[in-house]
Image 1 (spheres, rainbow, N blue to C red):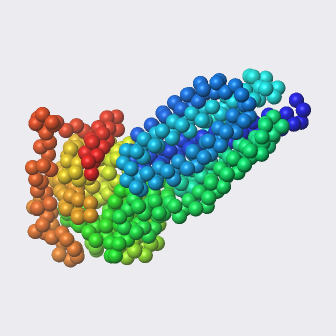
Image 2: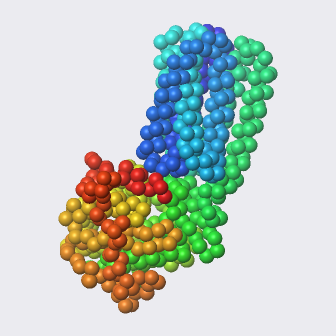
Image 3: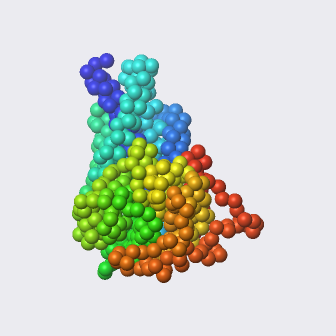
Length: 517
């Protein structure tokens, strides 16, 4: 091969790695968008991977029909990937923001299949072109495939550690589209003598470049406007952390906190939730050493600090960004009374399951304030194995209070959680409270020793806005449509199962329960 052919063949190998990086980024990007907008991350990533790989297979089979100019075919495939992939996130968020229920999911799955198919066409064309230049088929195939597989690893790392946290999902799509376009334009330049009407193809590439650059430059304002349409109140803070999308909204005095689109609390009525979460369990046991699993907003800690005999509080929250926001944002600082600045509080950033599994400390009280079990990774925090770990970290006199979703909207979910906690040998008291901002919410008080409802009380020196001693007994009363007597469609009483790591029955029940709300 001459010098020119060597440059061409070398760039083909580089191009195969680069387009592989872009393909993997689009694949995981679509999974992330589906997880954020449609929920159930495991389901969305599974569908994304399956559809993307299926598309690659379809594309690979179609590549043999490309018999014309291989270089020009590759260039226009990259143009399509750049244009379709670049605008994919923006289009998806637009459909969701304007209430296109069902259409957004169909669009996401279709676009995943299309980008997968275009990606599948790329490599066979590059291999054939490398072979045309003079590289043996075995050598060209091996090199291109090596570049492809190595690029896959780089793409995944790039998305997790740079693109998603720094650019977000809309700008990431435009950025990666620009990379695909650059590859196409470099190939166009290197092989310009083999292509007719080079200027026309260059102009088309330039127009696509302008569109992508406009999206990249103005993606953030567009993101803010689209995000705003997904929330009823004005957004005052938005961040894409390593783990989730964090949003604060404000309407008058009402501050609302969202994680991945799900409301976590409203400042108007969060005291109802957190007072029930904390005070009943604090009344039945010693309380010198407290563990809070979740609770990165500091509101549960605020309530715990009302007890003078508390000596130490350990808060385990996976996402540092949530705790940093609770510490630094003026509205949250005021709401949580600067709880994390208190000398009694220690924060650990770890997975709650792993923290309990690897630790040996015993606690008087454990507060479990974790997100709902709407995906596989969170579901493990609602299993018998997890609640057994909670039990094993309680002092012999210790007790736990566990957030257990809504007994009204998800009655079978609530009682399945209750049944799973009971299966560990803990004594339980079910409770629920009406929180106007997000409905009737349930908890399970679980104790190493048997406790009667009459033993629950609120200390006189503890100031509360909602809960009183007279009110506590009513929190343990459930109506007919929210109690444990769950019937199936035939009117037969259901036998509740236990949620375990091996048999995660809670997740499909949760999805079925919430699909109408």
